[in-house]
Image (cartoon, rainbow, N blue to C red; front, side):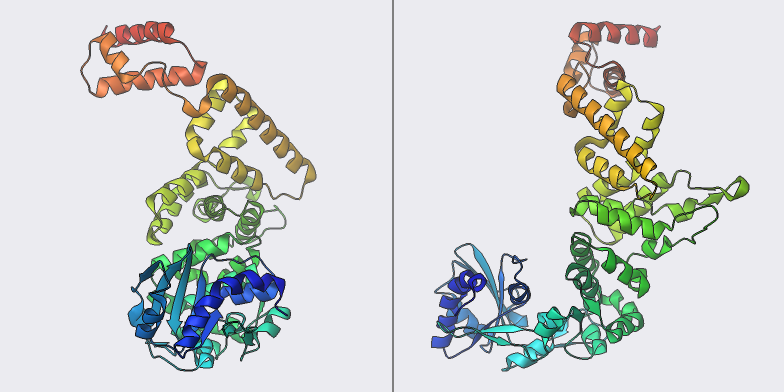
Length: 462
């Protein structure tokens, strides 16, 4: 009897499997779909990965009459892509590739055996396949006991970890995501291999490392994965600022370990990429700005400014899109702004906070709330109350003044017409003056704005 959770998957892939069977080939479902089906989880991916004994040209011949679209970019590596009724399929000839020590590209060798293909997979929990036999019940192919490892929460590689990580060093970083995302415990041999081989990550492109980091930070509980990066030395290869935050803890003055605090903040924030990255980087400037005052008092003056610059540099090195770099570094720069609120904020200060946060207001508030990891219940409750109050004031002002669209009461054309100016820097200065008024006093109305503009212009030209 087919398990209920498997029925919709089989309904989609069985017709394709029948086509391969008619052509004399076997088709196997592999990858995360098999793993998540065994776990009873919602499928992580919207596409299907399959492998077959058919060669690339044979795969293409089978899928072309069936697919709505076919792409061949990976054909030389044995992969044919296809889309059918909105679903993407990647069908790959069984492979037995190995990477050269100094290369990012695999030396592809095809195989006729699915077991050989599975042996080159990253971890045993991903080295399983469902043999699709047309209308028959699929058979689990599990030569490396991946199902047992899933059940016992064990992270292993099908071959020796030194072989697996030498073939594709990104697998070392992927290990962090799997032990965090699936609650797996790495075998000692896996940990030892990462400690020995992490310098090999240098041959992996920044883009692939970035994408894997993104996947790690958004798992619901990323703490174990982040600690794995630091403890194995892997973070030194692409994010040295992370282990750099492991400052010494002083029990006398109650100094926090910045790394432990950072990991706790990441875990507290919602699993959304930009806010999680901001949490990861928010205190990255502390090691560079740490100073000691009287009686050993520690301070980190301007660590948010230094941290924002460091964040920008590191994210650019990892080839993040410019919009991501701007958003995360801006959140790092602003993450302490709220703490001046304990001295009391005017409406003007609230407007400026909203204006400076811009479209990142929700993320900034989330980061600010989660930045509190104190065990002192009174302090935590006080911060939460102040944040509640600020958000209530933002809501009231937003309803009254449309804070999300704060603009001067006059636009550039009105300024030029009223003062008889041509386009130029003076018009921008006038608009800056009017925006400051808007932030300080709220909406003025056109008549009052023109009166204030006249006064500003008269003082300037006196």
